[in-house]
Amino acid sequence: MSATTTARHQRHVRARRPWAASGIVAVVVALVGGAILSYPLAAPWITDVIQADQLVAYHQGVDALDPADVERILTSAHDYNANLPNGPLRDPYVLNESGEAVSLDEGRTRYESELRLPTAGADTPMAQLSIPAIGVDLPVYHGTSEETLTRGVGHFYGSGLPVGGTGVHPVLTAHSGYVDATLFDDLDRLTVGDTFSILVLGELLHYRVDHIATVLPDESELLRQVPGKDYVTLVTCTPRYVNTHRLLVRGERVDGPDAAGGDDAATQLVTAPAVGMPWWVLVTLGPAVGTFFLVRPPRRRSPGTATEMAGLAG
Image (cartoon, rainbow, N blue to C red; front, side, top):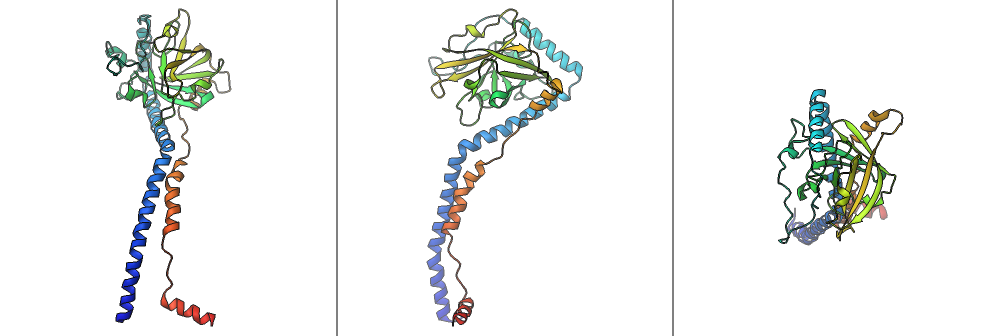
């Protein structure tokens, strides 16, 4: 290679290096921007995947139990419900004067052991809640701590366990407007007559909405047990992002649907909640891919190719 050719090559490399560096920076910036834009779509999708995995693991654990163990756990839960006092429930979203969540931990030892699978960890669901009208299939966990409410539906400590029975009134709560998950966001779309179900230890319990109310946080009369009634109430904060009130959606126990296949078909329908396609990936990668093609340096023809093209033109 001649000195002249070498000098030209070096000038060419120096000329392209800043352009290549700026292109890389542009692609990285576009990738970061795409990630930020896609977060509101990606976070709920990832949470849906985690919740689906937890529900599958829960139902596999239930299937592995002996019938005698299932009967023992359910009998203990019904006995727990029979001995619950009919007192007011404390709202888990209310803070004390120091701005901290009010402790609800007193006397929880037995509660935490109820509806617990023998081989399950502390983060295993106690049941599954399904609300077909708004596309909800969520795990139900013990308690209403903030950590619990980021993972799914929380069960109000102090209310009945969700195993059915007259005079029992379980209360289940979840966030609405939570950016990392889609939980009770559409609870306000339910109307009287809509149905929901709870799947617990292989038993599917059906409820029909019979009352909807908006109350202040300290108004808990509607959450008390009612003699002779088998209720479940779903609770979330309202208005969304303001959270000054509570939306209560109460359902009364009804017989299961008489559709072909009976409860077995319904059980199979809700034990494997579907997770949608991760379309958010397109939002994440799209800007970066587009930027790459816009800023990449054009290919230079080799000297031989240029000479051949000139010869053809002549």
